[in-house]
Image (cartoon, rainbow, N blue to C red; front, top):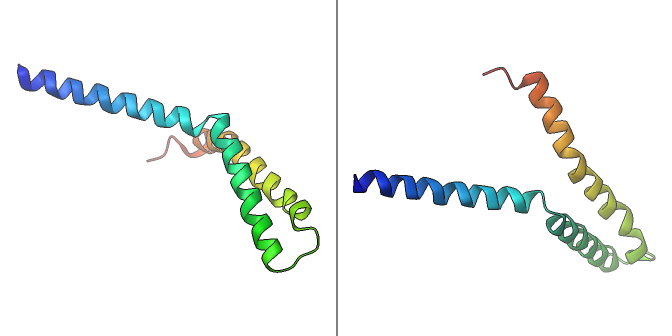
Length: 87
């Protein structure tokens, strides 16, 4: 019986971790961090290759990346609706 309780405890711990990971994946904190880090990375790159107004020009790709991450859940649901029943 002790083994069964340990297995249940491990399953419950795993489920909690999965729920926390899902909460992080869908959080606005993660999305904003992605936007900021993308903007900074592109800005640094544009500055390194001596593009005029690198920080202004970094806005468009950073926002485009953010839009793409926001639309992924919609397209995932659509894909699952169309193809999800197939194995």
